[in-house]
Length: 82
Image (cartoon, rainbow, N blue to C red):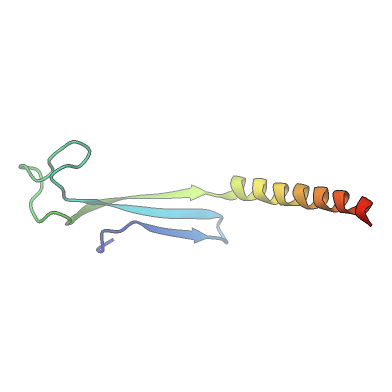
């Protein structure tokens, strides 16, 4: 978070995506001047962060189903060619 860059990590064993988005000090953040009386410091200083975990289990299951279906379709289409 200190770098001011977003962080992303997929925890495959848990089936989740963890994302952290730092909020930086700025003269124009979502239309507001954060430095006009609200926050002290330099432009680009990290003021805080938004952290979230998103479950990927549903998407992983859909991908697995699609992979099976497309594999079976490819197999079925290749049989007449033999």
